[in-house]
Length: 264
Image (cartoon, rainbow, N blue to C red):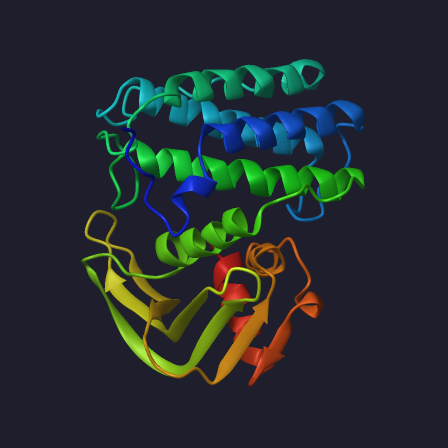
């Protein structure tokens, strides 16, 4: 029996999601002018977007192919000419999917996060493909793809649990005022976060950090942002409009949360 991917909705992510949304981006890019700007990725064209996802997928295909070893031996490929960049994403997706197919998500594999399993890559690359497919659609003026509420809710959960909250061992979290809750109407999920600062000195670089940070809490919130899982996920990722959500309490807190997410 194949083990489950970690996450709020483990059955919502996986190789089928990676394949579907990556190849859908291939299709969108193949129909658009490659120099079209991507509004959700300032400074990028569609060709840049396609190459970015290609690089990411080749990197993780290398990691999974060498599991549980890390990526120390990885050599980043040179960027090809834009005339073949879209076909390159098609090949990279096939390579990544082939290496992930039929693997036990619990099998050890390197990652930059605390989760050192194949499941981390399955989940992370599912959401990577989804978000960049949305980027491509927004750039090309194509309809936003159909994304299930459970997949969108898991994207919120990953963003909060992996990207937005927690501090490294060498840093501390110093609480500040403000607690915000995110709620989804269609999946009945919620996440509550306290605002604060991450303060500490990185041991390897000696860099002193004093940054906005968030910490999950179980207490009443003074600001609540709610809507469908998809609208909430797209807003948190900078791909959607807060006008599609309901905000109660202090709207400045919602903007603060979005600013923290945008700084990643």
